[in-house]
Amino acid sequence: MLPFKIRVTRKIIHQCKYAGTPGDENILGNICPVAVAVKDMFPHVYVANDFLYPYGKDTNLKIELPSIAKHFITLFDSLSTDIETRLVIPTFEFEIEIPDEVIEMIKIEKDLFELQLV
Image (cartoon, rainbow, N blue to C red; front, side, top):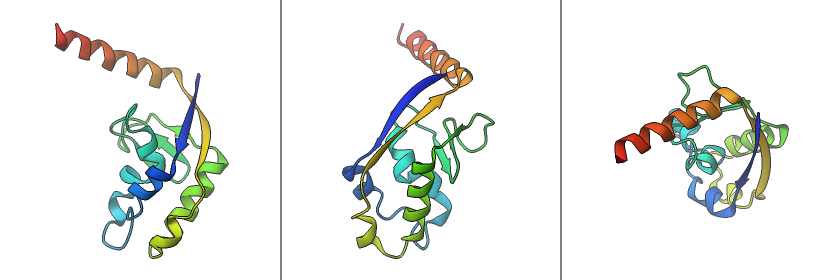
């Protein structure tokens, strides 16, 4: 397990203010602030209430989110029709433990990328 700190910044919240609004409910897990905060590391991330799926929702690899992230998601989702209130939700950070199997996948992807560069 590897600890990893995630920051949900004001910029991210602003960028995601329309995520999950009426008409876009089905794609919320890919574009919510928690997902966007880790997109650089996990481009195919999907977030559902309690878990972060680093390689998408169709995989078995998942990381449980801490309670602060779960509360944020519940609050953010509940404000899908009140964008202005979403914009004043406080920023926060939290830590997750990245399981060894997820770390191994990162290493495999890095190795494949480096092979393609040669």
